[in-house]
Length: 324
Image (cartoon, rainbow, N blue to C red; front, side):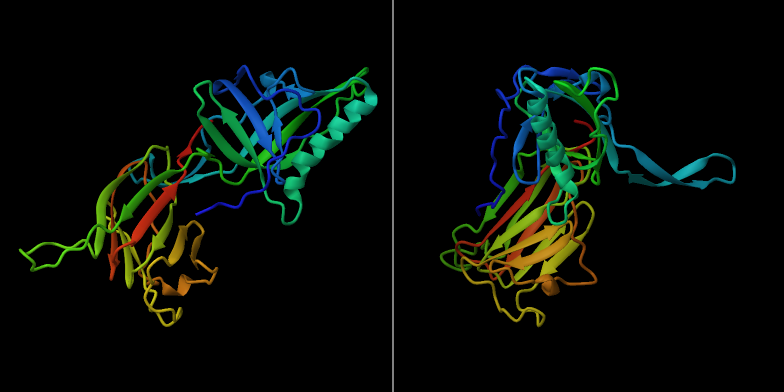
């Protein structure tokens, strides 16, 4: 299924793309870039460009901070009841320079807009990306909080200046931009009695193990391709399950026909037929649990009643990590 994304363009006068990794506190050698809500990519660690990161002041890239809820124990001490991940704030000092004052002002204004537009209605967050020498990357969604102010020092603001940005992250976990995927499709159907008793794959597409390599739970997206009359997903490890019935009165569609697709997102809960119709009413509420995948191995089962040639399930997720 094609993904519609904002066009990625290059800002003026950015210089060459990030090259040699630089040392960043808490995470070691890495490169960094920022993608604003319009899709424009801004390199942050290229010292040959017109702006670059002052790495000594970077902070907030380490492990997530938690708020612990505890219960006092009668014999002393306490017992942990719940750990709540808190939003993250990243501090990112940025040095900006120009051949003259007017060029500095032009670049300063462009960068300020790139970050502050995350607060415009309908724009959404930007994306801070950390790249490693081995090619792996981790991303986090950021909103501008404050700090795009020049230094009140003699000589600064003429051809060069620096800002110390505070970037607020509603989700404190870092995400691998490369999705993990699992595909299951109905095999060749066999008659139960011809020539010998056999088991058909017309209902269960697979009991399989899905491995989440991340540090915390992830909430997958499911794409189901018909035919199917009833769709059941079960997490064997936790016992959680949810069922989607395309024949439910709230939908009024009938069986999912060959080639028809429905997409189920687990966070936030959303069920959409291929034309955009809302199918959330087809879930077996209140018993349903749109479960996530815990770190490590997860035993799961995909079951499609009324399946046939072409019936398929595609599960995708992006691992989430404590640190960059």
